[in-house]
Amino acid sequence: MSILPASERPNPYSAYGAHGSVLVLNSGSSSLKYQLVNPVGGEAIAAGTVERIGEPSGIVTHTFAGNRTRRELEVADHGAALRLALGMFDEIGPALHGAGIYAVGHRVVHGGAEFSGPVVVDDDVIDRIESLVPLAPLHNPANVQGIRVARELLGDVPHVAVFDTAFFQALPAEAYTYAIDREVAREHDVRRYGFHGTSHQYVAGKVARVLGRRVEDLNTIVLHLGNGASASAVRGGVPIDTSMGLTPLEGLVMGTRSGDIDPAVVFHLARNAGMDIDELDTLLNKRSGVLGLSGVNDFRELHRLVEEGDEDAALALDVYVHRLRKYVGAYTALLGRVDVIAFTAGVGENDAVVRAAVCADLEALGIAVDDDRNAARGEERIISPDWTKTLVMVIPTMEELAIARQSVEAVDRLHPSAAVATG
Ligand code: AMP
Image (tube, rainbow, N blue to C red; front, side, top):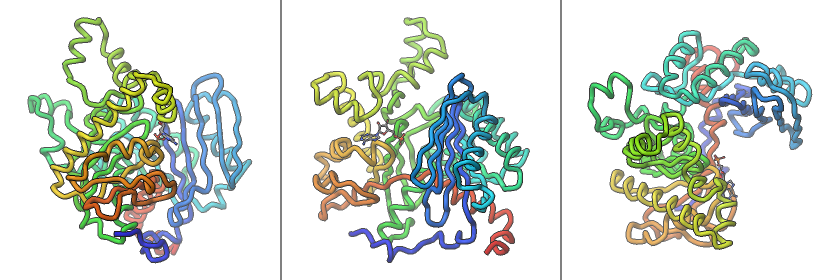
């Protein structure tokens, strides 16, 4: 099977032709990332970040037309951050009123069991996102704050919330149910939600488009390996399992998160190390994973340490790969037939060593990586040899583009006439 040349691939997004651009906002607890996206061509017209919100020395970077501008100044809160970002568009470009903004798309981490797709934001939607704060105390408050200030400052355009959990609302009950007391689970909404859904959905769909196949006909394992990392098993475009759970802590070994551990580790440390809940939360989310094992969380650093003979770094890499291989095996059993394994995000797209290690010695399962193809750089590509039953692919994720396209779809669903009028 080969990749269709770009000119022969259908462009399912040509219908967006009249929709100008979408401003995508990702509001974290101390940062705001933004990107002005062309939902048709897919390119970022401009992008930037405001970091260290609430600290005396904030950092603003804005990139437009190949030029990167960087400023250091105090950024009091999310309102100030967005005002600064909008100021960068005014000063450096492109002028937003000339960019024809069709929608503002907001990345929201937790949609609970409430949201299974993008929604156009109104006051009720904000209240519902806020009611999910107990499930995502670190993320949803910042997301809500970002939406509130953006609606104040950009009141003329529709705002759309796109949830990290939405894609995984389609998981079957046996995959999302934890085997704990059902009354406790029900009362406190304890279940698997899954995260990085926008990326998993985009990558599974992109695999099909690149191969010129229908997503309904493909079984895909998506490995989203960034600083956060998650795996999913997608059958015919519908997820049947994913590695992250109630929160993004479960599953794979990550940059700073432990992923799967025996939950009794928490009881043990509470009883014997005197750690309280917040310390345990910090331990498992921020001081664990590759960082906890090796002292670094960037894989370029990790490989450098391994080459220098650092044994902790070597063990960290082994633990990371071992966990990934367990998930590939588990999802192979769940899917029965695996057509594609797709690597994406910072590590998945760039780290040939990790990709080769994950797929090593799996010829009996019809999985292998070709060394030359794996070492080559590029965009979406096949890195398995021609004979394998399962294609191994690298698919760059484009979460902002996916959010932009979902935002356009949500607005058009709500106001079908707008699509015609602007068309
Ligand atoms: P993301 O969260 O998708 O932005 O991924 C960030 C992570 O990707 C970083 O922490 C690095 O570990 C990893 N990464 C980025 N570039 C490279 C590279 N060239 N080689 C290996 N790992 C990389």
